[in-house]
Picture (spheres, rainbow, N blue to C red):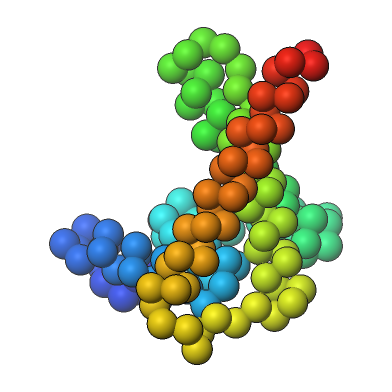
Length: 142
């Protein structure tokens, strides 16, 4: 975890470092390199790498995000006892943001940390709102 947040697992500054590094990331793709490093490592090793053996990197990345969303939706199912697809939709939109950042070689590192944080939080908020709308539309249609 030293590579991801600069301190060992369980260190008192781990959460602060994760938030500081992820929110201040130079683009939305780098945001995910710092966010939740343990879960990110597991997803990278056990989902993304195997998916990359069968898919190009872009679709493998989207698959990994959607799989992560499925895991979150399974938690909702376990709590509410009814299916949810919200997180899969939301995480798919966030994966698209990562691909867009890579495609355009987005680099906000010249901006102050606060503006980078606003940018990253804004994208999370925009994708959350969009996923909420799409999820609602699907519920009405089906």
